[in-house]
Image (cartoon, rainbow, N blue to C red; front, side):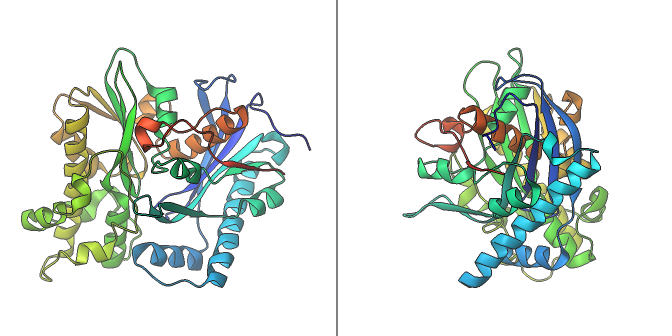
Length: 376
């Protein structure tokens, strides 16, 4: 078949974040062919991982577990199959057929993200050949590695999408994604867009909650609300040198995992107090980063799973007097699917031959067309 073009309107974005809480699928329509075309979410749903595969991914992300080459190869295919299943379910559940979709943008599952050191790399698995073969739809995947090859962090990539759809020339804004890791996009009324990771968010909160309550996430922030933050523990966690690094910066579950938390514990802490401390760690690092980099922010637009944690959202609002803290839904973007929509947009930008990174965000030596095309 001929190569797809960016003139067609419907794209499917797929992502599983550092929390590994499911595969987000977003069918997105764009109303014209420009980079700033208004996206409309036609359908969004989160599909569960096969339980054994999710358990293995969490274990690989939490600690430096050894993995053989045979298992790595098999895992790549298994993740690709899970992503393909999510794509096909989303297309079917939306009442469509694969022929209606111009292309799929697949982020894959990050296993390691090491943009520092003598051999920088980032590793996302989820064989795009498998997705294209099973779905019969062209796939754009492997978005991060070109930016790393150009000297960047390969992350965060979503700020380019935020800038395209949420910038306001009359107001200094920031977009906060509360996923497994928290990241900020700075959208000044005038000036350059910037973005960077600020540290842990749902990844640690979910993992600690699962260990001590058996629940995969802290519904309504109730577990954290049962406890009180421990100032000395918070201070020890904040001593991690990563927090003092200047942007551009990025991180992942391979740095901020439960072993990292346990190394700071004295062993007598009540689990709910630790949960409250981890919540305040996220708030403290987000607010410090925002005040240091864009102190005149007037509106903080929040997306990601953390939007559904009222304790976290209230703590953010309390720590940012004078700033409007609101979910992205107020701007027509479902907070649960902004990242998946971004990868639909990145696939579209790839087909249009337009750069998908922002060098001021990632630190790359220049703008680059991101990803590789895998034909149907």
